[in-house]
Structure formats: C-alpha cells, structure tokens
Length: 173
Ligand code: AMP
Image (cartoon, rainbow, N blue to C red; front, side):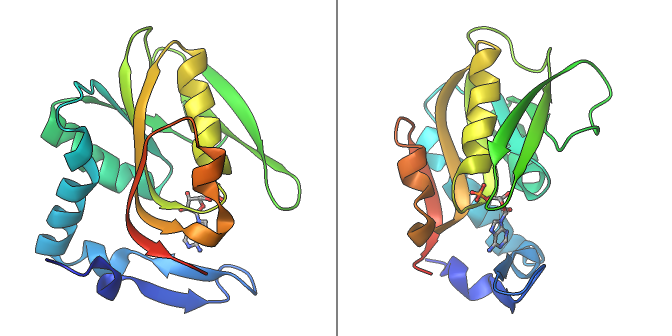
C-alpha cells in the first residue's frame, strides 16, 4: 500500500501568508505513485458508466485526463473566466474575500451525461460546488466527485453533502 501523503510537499505561506500549500508535483514525478493515485481516485466509480470526466483547472486536468483515458470517457475542462474559446456557461462562487467564477463550454455536457468531477484538492468546496452546478444546469448527472487531498477542517464535504465524495488523503488542518 502506498502512503500517498509521503509524496505531498507542504509549502508554508504560498501563495499568500497563512496558506499551507499542498504541492502535488512531488507525487506526479513518481510514475508508479501517480498511476496508483489515478487508479484509486476513479476506482470507486469504475462500474458507474461514467461517460464524462469534468476536470477543474488546473491540477484537476492532470488527474482527470488520465482517468478519462482509463474509463474511455470524454474530458471536459472547467476553467477560469476568459480561457475557453467557444460559448460558455458561467457560475460565480464565494471566496473568503469576494467572488470568483468558473466556466464550461455549453456543448461540453449533454442532457443525461453521467459525470465524475475531479480536482486535486477539496478545501471549502466552493470550487467543486460551482462545477457541479454548471454540470447540472447543462443537464448532466453528477455521479460523484474524487479528490487526491481533502482538508477536512474546511468542511467541503458538508457543502457537497448531496453528492458522493471520495478522497485519498485527509489532513485535519
Ligand atoms: P475550495 O474551493 O476552497 O474547495 O478550494 C479548492 C481549490 O483551491 C482547488 O482547485 C485546489 O487546487 C485549490 N486549493 C485550495 N487550498 C489549497 C491548498 N492548501 N493547497 C493547494 N491547493 C489548494
């Protein structure tokens, strides 16, 4: 059994003072560890007939694309404003100070799609909830969400309580 947390590097005060950044590049660079993480992140959803993986910019793209290949599913990027070239749907969400928003292509999700949402890390859950809202507004069904890391004290799982949520590493900070 791989202890994934051994491969996560903590960077204090990045990108701003007071944030302990979880750096996953130290996991990604180890081929067998990266592969095992991908396998365990989508494992619980293997039999769920997922046809779309929605990856959240930017580290969700790394894990999500690998899973889409494994599941023979389509990959749909959810991006920060102004990055996607075609017509988009946009969803605002709360940050500690102010708001941010995320976008998806209108033709990225079709009614009835069975969707797995992927990101590297679950903190407050605002990013993931906005992503689920985008998918649902386009008629997709959220089968579940999967994260490499969960910061449990920020209670993202409570915000996402109507969905199935998996994470491989939990930190109580
Ligand atoms: P939240 O919306 O609060 O759940 O934040 C999740 C998003 O912010 C994810 O896309 C993460 O990549 C990023 N994020 C939040 N906190 C951290 C952290 N401590 N280390 C690395 N990434 C983080």
